[in-house]
Image (cartoon, rainbow, N blue to C red; front, side, top):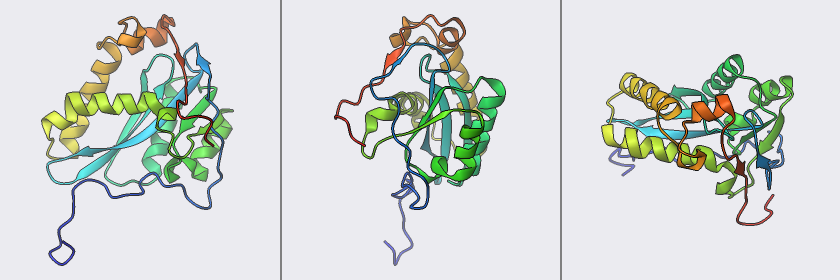
Length: 207
């Protein structure tokens, strides 16, 4: 494949690898009952398949309501679009008490963590191999891919941007959430009428 110049269109490995020089923060949400909006937020990056190649999408989600607070699309997996997403969320909503992410270098870089510290947030980083630490964002990406991007096969960034804007608007404002008594994330965020969430690490203490 190398000789013929062939490569998979999916992103390569190590997109979430920690930077060896970045500070390692502990996971702060183990066994925590999330009982109100802005108590804990999470972020994650996923890839979106295009007709030719792929792009990356980052989102910040409120752990109580599951509302998407901010999102960004990029054709490069650097830290700048993650930082833009964070700054937009802070312009629109109050800072959460705890901000959780995986160990990816984009979210452990100093420009990103310095904003979290500036706003007085507690930084929480998933333990290695602990998929359930960031489960709410993982479920969001599964929903987005199964109901939108994997079905459409958008040709380019413009098409996928327009499609995902509509998809997130529907997810926040119209799509009932079974875990929240069939209320929408936007309604639960605004009224606090939801069941909350117990953050559980089913594989034990971890890091």
